[in-house]
Length: 309
Ligand code: NDP
Image 1 (cartoon, rainbow, N blue to C red):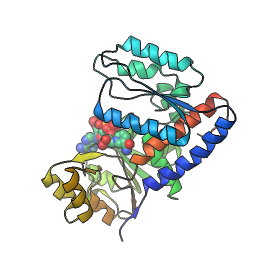
Image 2 (cartoon, helix red, strand yellow):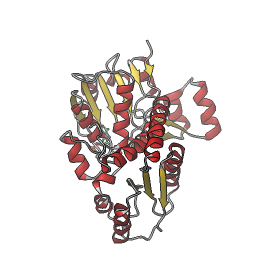
Image 3 (spheres, helix red, strand yellow):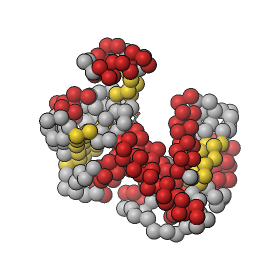
Image 4 (cartoon, rainbow, N blue to C red):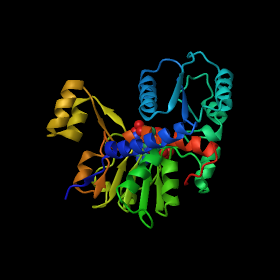
């Protein structure tokens, strides 16, 4: 039986509708949430991401501010800019769009963002809160993955979970969130021996690798839930055929655009998984929704309103 497709676009839209209502009532009470986004230089991909984030704020009624320093900015200047935002009461969230130019010490800049305004959840203080199960701000993509599980009624407690990838922004926080939700968690990486065998143990498999279609059917236990974080662009015809041969809809789009997206999970996995997030339309839309959610959460936390972990 083919897998249930976990519709990230629908889940993200539900979250946004809930947030819009919350923002409305916070605004009425004189506490409109605000997000500042710093976009350094002229990176076309970053510009698209930032545009999406600002548009999303507008749709939800969140105040937003885009700051665009030149690509020649120094670490000190950028840190001073962040400190200025730390001091402003109407700014609840500060996002520094990565990557930063080579001359900038990105870790230092991210450390400068006040932990209460760190809507990306990258500050070591928030990493510590997550690992000790205290309320804090959690990285958006793994938080989105957990929302997909929760809102799809997929139980996590006691389940064997395998996370492939150990980056600070996806793999590690995803593993920590699953552990906090009482899963039994294994984290894999490029040095893991017999990765397929380890993955086959998983009731919940998270792929956050950055390698197109690497997780094939022999990595997956039939009936498992598969969360595909990967976003990889396919432009070569041969590679396209490897993943989407016979898929008419994809074929039309590929012919029109000259490219298509594939996750870290091979599309064939949908034939044996119990449930799976598609690419596109899976975890991607959740990332911006969770950024909005973190902005609202940051606004509430700074004003002393209770939030759940
Ligand atoms: P990183 O490159 O930072 O981390 C990749 C991880 O995968 C590393 O831990 C690496 O292991 C591991 N890995 C690489 N090759 C293998 C292999 N052959 N076998 C096992 N493990 C391997 O990537 P990110 O975590 O930043 O991103 C992962 C993917 O998620 C990317 O496709 C990215 O585009 C996507 N992404 C999607 C987002 C969304 O909004 N949906 C947001 C962020 C990322 P090691 O540590 O040993 O090197």
